[in-house]
Image 1 (cartoon, rainbow, N blue to C red):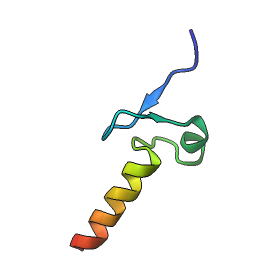
Image 2: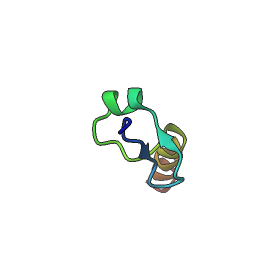
Image 3: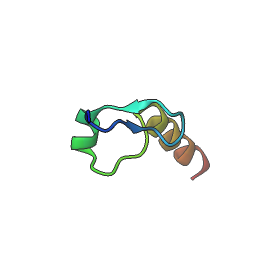
Length: 44
């Protein structure tokens, strides 16, 4: 089998292996993570 592909929980796009090495257990792609952080700041 090939390397497992991890998909973003929010949009379904693949999460790159490099990102998962930096952030173990990450479940969002870069775009969705940034969007969620902007939303959090907006409502904080």
